[in-house]
Amino acid sequence: NIILCAGQVSKKDLEKAAMDAGSDLAGKLFSIGGAYEAGELDAKRAIDMGTRLALKIKDDEVVPGKHKFNADVGAEEILYKKMMSFIR
Image 1 (cartoon, one colour):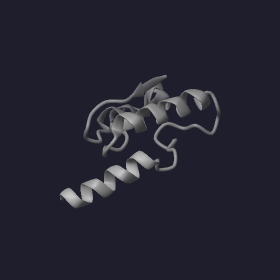
Image 2: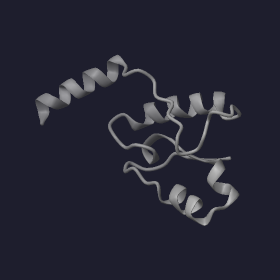
Image 3: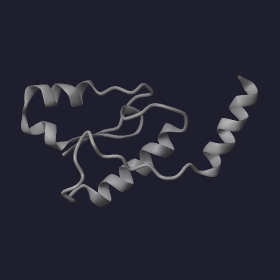
Image 4: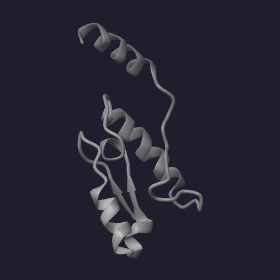
């Protein structure tokens, strides 16, 4: 399995290339964190997604490109978004 967790901008080039090539790699590539969906507080979200993926990666229902392991929005993220709304 390959777990891609990189960047501040969502990038799915590697995932797309693997699927286009039709290789076995396509079924083993998971994008999490900023590589999956960029936004504020990426590190916290990436750690959460990585932990959830690690706990379930062997389950049959976990399919690359169709996985989503997000926690509920925490107090820190709510506060951050509220503060940013005043600054912007």
